[in-house]
Image: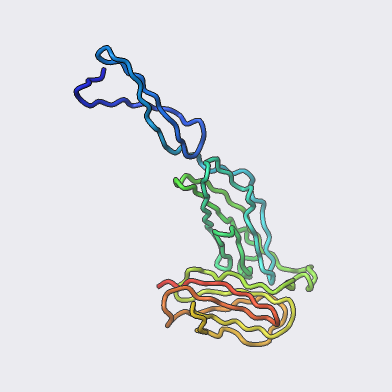
Length: 241
């Protein structure tokens, strides 16, 4: 019973009809001191659901001498919360493998000490309210025996995202060129001034890795540019101290 001369409260529990953000109106009918009335109370909230594994990731194979690239399929996880954004995190990766959570891409040049060893790679996804689920896939590294040499050569000029990124003080920059030619790799600051000439020589067709040492440079965003013949590729890296 409500006392008109004092404050009181009513607790109402209800289940949202849909997942995600909920907007509704609760109508309260009251009768007190011979008077009947109705008030409307706006109700907002969030009904959260845990992301769900929809499709398992099959085992993947990386070959020595060949750049390994794998993109997590969009159908791997589903989440019913309206407007939710899933964030991805990878675990259990060997040192030669990197993961970009923005593009959901694994990439790296296999190391010889992982040949024949099954590597379980874990993936964890979280929604905005930190509800999470996970899965894993097995990555195998094999020798390129029996594969034609032409198949090992890159098909185009490619400059890959450095790893780790952000970094302090060193990071690895990987690139590939499809034909023999002059290759130049330079790092610039955001004002366009060259701060490091990492490479300027003739390279055979193949995939390569260069270590960039940021000691002596200030924290911030830098641009690295690869020029191979007439082709130019650029990316950004972040130095954090």
